[in-house]
Image (cartoon, rainbow, N blue to C red; front, side, top):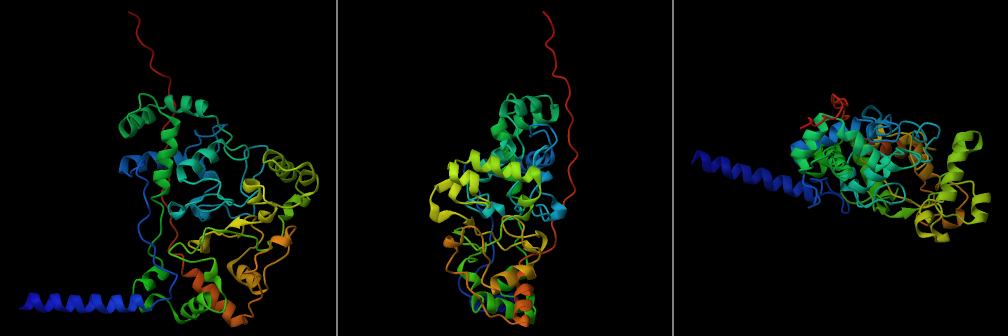
Length: 374
């Protein structure tokens, strides 16, 4: 009888929790397990290999630019600067996005140019303003590391390390960097005490008066669509010669018209992929998760703090070179100072504790064994 009573109590508790969870705003949800592609299953051995490769500069042109150089764990797994680092002699031309919860995205990079973490890893390692590596060169380097030869054989069955498998291992590691236990997630799962009063008021504003949910919806808090918010152009293009050269290179390399190349002073964004004038200045909506640690914000880092972000939206966005394409969703919100503070408090509930792993020990290159003469 005691066991039956305990079982009944458990059912009552679960039912109450379910009722509380149902009494939550529509259009938002707690974050579940990340999707895993059928052709890149997660194993502890693959994740461990990917972790080493993520922190190892071996997958770059000059053997000095690992993934972690632009995705630093103690900087939100990004860069706490407007524009990300570039390959030596260059700078980047967009803000680094965090890899935390990147496993859930269907589109990677600010203009959605990669459809998977595997493709994203390859693009970053080979990119002219990032890794600047060549697959055959990086493969050869991997072959000079006995530990990597052994790991690639065990994980992928490679006789010699295959760089395509390196990207798969990195993607597997990145899919392990997720955060599903934020105060917001715990609240959405039924714990009324997970958010304080200010955060609850902020949540009401988020789905109501502030209209954030129009673009930041679902468990990941993004529609993964493209919008022009009127973010001002990166100010470094005015006085940083290397940044100017990099920007002009990107304009030319991505197929701008002659007129655009000579006159454009701002990042055309999605236009580079579609070549549609209506897409100039549009960028993919980022997730709002883990944003407590990923300042500054927007595709060019031109907004410093979460408070500044809310004030930017409250003012109806900004103005940029592509004003004709500014989203009609962006309009003045009329939030009071206290409402701005409440909304910021809610946004901070979308981040849990910082994810700060101990970096792995990296193996060293050694000469390849020489076959004995017969």
